[in-house]
Structures are given as structure tokens and as C-alpha cells.
Length: 290
Image (cartoon, rainbow, N blue to C red):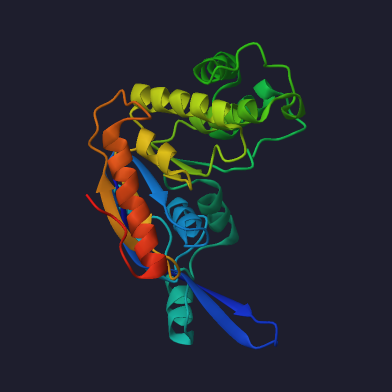
């Protein structure tokens, strides 16, 4: 289970007049995600969704608040005062550089992150990309190739093992990124606009493949997307972020039975509700009738 408790993220910046300023990207956002759920985070561009997702992954430390996965703290908030810094140093004063290295190189949680830009190694073939992840996991050499074949089969890339990412379509590169994520054997997959760079037909095929993989594996998936139809088709629930500072505005369950029809009236009704929330946040008035 993922528990985000009152997450706030403040970024310090220097404005055009060289004056110290700042922006609050996420403000006191709390969210609980049960094991095996598929949750989508939606909202206007720049509302803090991706920042929140990276905090869940432990890629950024929150300014305030905490994220727990299965009861374990992901990352502590960064010290913001001299007193907090002194306390931080006191807490970790016995950790040697070797111990720090061990902690850094061994993730606390079974999480895989998939980005919009594929995040694969261009100098490695498809199979080498997956084999490298298995090597990092410590999988014995003799077991790596059969496992790599299994993950590539799951994402539909068998037959492309010897190709380089530059020889793949955008959709195939994203399949490779998904195969790498699966090879980590994570409990949780976090995805940041994973299908934004592909055409509409490929996007729908990738959505169906992802839905099948999720149903087969029972993993928890949290996805940031700007595509409401994608969120509605895939998700158990949709979390709507407000404009900056990003707060969790609504959590809407998608109780439409699967398999779903993309053009169903039930999904269209939910889409209208979310669009009305967007409209209200931007204009201060509601246009929803239903």
C-alpha cells in the first residue's frame, strides 16, 4: 500500500530580476493507494502531478510530509532549517561512506518508473537492455537470457531482440521500457505520460497491452496522463489535481465493469464531470449538468 501524507514540495528559484523567489508545486497532498490498484493522476499542465509521482518514487524528497510504502518511509523531507540540519547530521553521524553507498545502491522498495522519453540505453540491443537490468538485480548469469525472453514476450517484442532502440518505432521503444520495468519484478509501476509520444492507434494498442499486463500480474500502477479518455479506460480511480499549488482536488472511482468500451455512456459521463472540475478551477463557475 502507498500512503502519501500531506506532501508539500517547494522549489526555490531566482527570478528575472535576480531576486530569490519560489514556487509551491505540491501543497499538502494526501493519497492512499491499495495494492493492485490502477490509479491515474490528471490535471492541467504544470499542476505538480509529475513532481508528486517522483516523490512517490523517492526520486525527489518532499519539503514537508511523508510517503510510506508498505509501512516503510520512502524518503525523509529535506532539512530546511539549521536545527533540522543539525538533527539530520546527528541521526546519521555513524554512517560511513561505505554504508551510505550500500543504502544508496539498494532500493528500499520494489518500484519501477517509466518516463515519456523511454529511458532505454541506445547503445544496447533490445535484449541487452533487459539483460542489463537483470544483472543489476543480481540474477545469476545462466537465468538471465530465459528471463529476458519471458519479459520481451510479455510486451510483444520477441523477434526484435537484436535491434537497437534507434531501429524501433516509438511504440516499440516504450514496450522495451515496460519490459525493463517488469524485469525489476516491482510491486509498483509508476508511469509519467508513458504513451504521449506515440500516435493514437499505437497508443490504444499500448493501453490494451498495459491493461492485460496489469490484470495478469496484479501490480499496483500509478500513471500521470493528460488524456482523460486514457485515464477513464484504464483506471480504478482518477485523482484530479488542482492548478498550482497542486493539491488533490477530487478522487473519482471508475466503477464501470471491464472490459470497457471506450465510447461507453458511463465513461462519457465521468469525462464530463472531470472537465467540469477543470472548468470550475479555471473560471470559477460550473458548466456541468447531470
